[in-house]
Length: 321
Image (tube, rainbow, N blue to C red; front, side, top):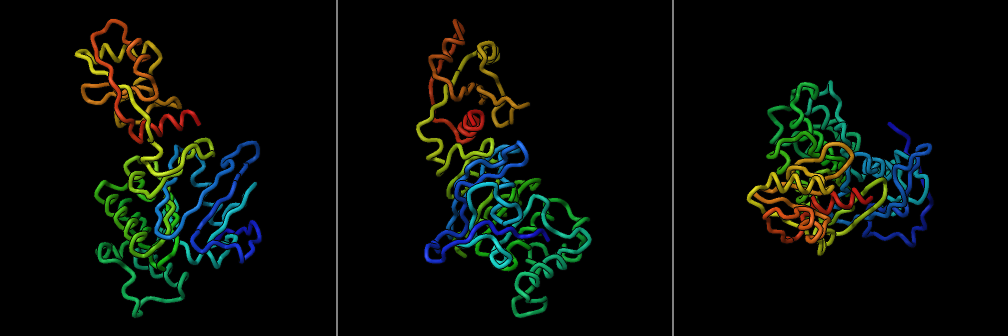
């Protein structure tokens, strides 16, 4: 097990019991590369805080510092008001991207082992069965032989087995089908709402981001936006082009430097798209309607504005960050 790194000494008289996990001006440097740069973050009971960002934004590094698995290069982190420690880790449920299951053990063996490690309570007690009903049919199957979606469900069950007060979930639905994803998010919301646990979850999905109480958007290791989804979108508007010949309109926009991508798809390469095709219309986030109309020149088309989506604002924030 990796060593837990204590990062500071905290005066118990100033501990806020409503803050389960906190980062204050946290930075992490690897050689000349700054992975996390001055991040502030806090989560309280019943909150679901989403860490939103592209690959390399610093999401996983931030979670590993919160757990004490990585020392901070600057700032401080606290779990339950104190530096990360083995004692505080017992109150946390952590789901890494790599699932955290033993491949050569069955689901039942993984869950029983995890519960015993965290609580000292072995199988066959009055706490009930170790394997949830939804996974019972796979209880005797080794993890290496499970479909990825089932393995992720098992990993999530293991995270919840010791009734943690704080969940740290690193892309918990990666590779999971839509139905399983919806069920996992139902469990996340229920754990926060009914059990009062705090949740920090990393995701790339705008749909999942909408499920969070509030969001922290990271780009290049920095916080570029924070708040609810509605607060992050704010008054942002998107130019919308409707033309009988949308292909010609798309060509004009691209010629003017407004790069195009089909709606709902990620742009190829490091550059983010300025234009997205949406049915018979072209959406051009981050550009004034007058600029878009000028790019179309004499092409018959209408240019209006509509409220921007969270995905469009995310792309603009990440590109700017």
